[in-house]
Figure 1 (cartoon, rainbow, N blue to C red):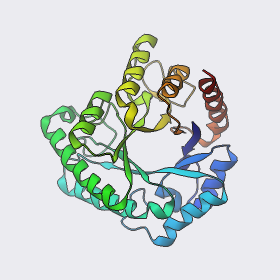
Figure 2: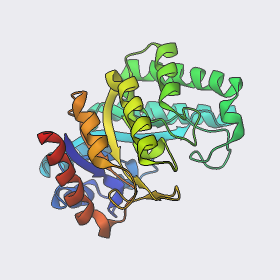
Figure 3: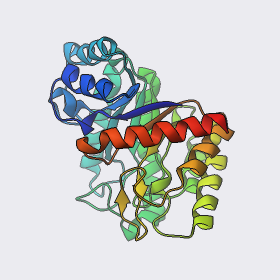
Length: 278
């Protein structure tokens, strides 16, 4: 597995400066965000020069851009907001090749109108699922046209709030473009170690054929998100299960401050070494 980080962890609006910080911190790859180019995360326009500058900066710094963030609320209660998200997804997808990446990470969304990462009781409604299917069909059409893949992440606060729902989406859409970003900290809030192991193992087994990226953050014992290595997530178990299915992609850490990067990089590198030797 390759160790990487959200590029947005580091301050800056110039891709060369941001990606230089990524490389100097010891990472091999990055999940990029257009904010690192001084643009909105989901811009209305990306020029050819802006896209090329990302790939050129990555090459100069010896990095791989393994994905670009393309999150918008795919089941926002306002259809016009969803349509605007689709338009911006197309803008991003059309520039992926120039940025030397072919994976866009998505947010399957929530009925909350203000925060795409906040749970809502209507997320489990048939109407929300119908809207997600419609949105994913549109996203897949864009992905087919631009030859990119779409990474979805099971997330308790979103409509795809479990590994089972992610599998259902894959089976209903039936497109090889839909891939999985695995983040176990998004699959549970609190629980015993045995319960955590069961949730993580079953999710990886159920989605093994579609996992293209793994994320690395953590949970505190009371359910709050935490920096990788500073919570209750059993990383030996998590990375060992990924290794057992032959996963050789990138492990991307996020949800940390820049001054935590050195410690997190050392922690994850040690856990990866253990999993490789298991």
